[in-house]
Image (tube, rainbow, N blue to C red; front, side, top):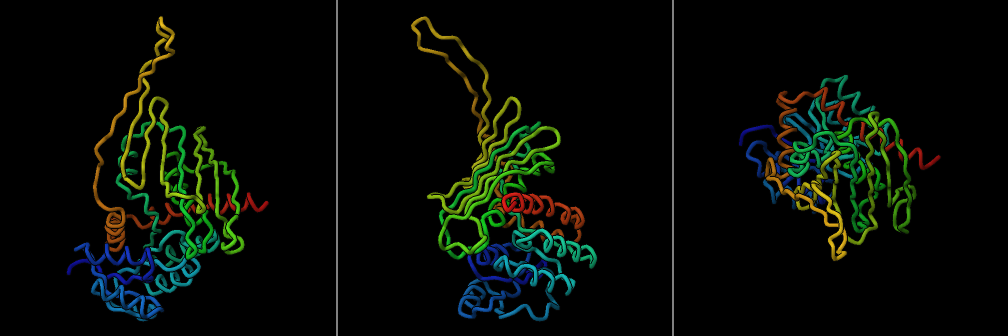
Length: 318
């Protein structure tokens, strides 16, 4: 096996996906899997040919660490990895608060140890295709709704909304205005962990993004609509497809009074890549490890979406 030796922290739903992708990549080795629950951790580790550990322990011989543990454990785990001098990929959010997030990023920069955040939609083939097609975006809408999952204790703003805030920023720039609301409805949610978050982002050149996240929906929805002045680009993030709409004509009513006729051209472009997002993200991480990806730029790219989520929650509290 060639490539960096990766230690994975977390054998839950997301951790198992990381384990599969790392072990199958051919460009990295899943050296060890950490989970304090032996029956869970050992099962996933053995399934993907890795050593099981109850805790991180000694990181000698490890080239990179992926943290896919619960959000509340991220800060401590991230500091432990960075202080050991090992490059880090931490699932989103880096921490469930901006101050803690900034502290971790600053530690990474001070120590000169690369880090990235698992903002996975950046690597979605449909998103990458849409970004190639967009000319001058002026308005974006994103919807990320899911049925309730009791095991997720983090509020929906940090758990879901952060993805689409990140995509909006990558399309329209860093926002200068943030408004919206977060609300908690489900009786099983941890106090303070909101179930619905709605945000409107205003940008310096007049662009607008409306981002909606919910974990009390009755079906899973992941959509992104990007409006140029003369085109609409619709992205289905689940199916990973793109549709482009362009209105070309209006005609007055016919003599028999059948009303206006409209004509719209619909295009379904070929995707620029078919690589699974987690695999593409892993390739980006190995680039951070070997120095072919700019570590400073990667750190800077984490902050804007985390800052917007913090501003939204602060606005709601006030």
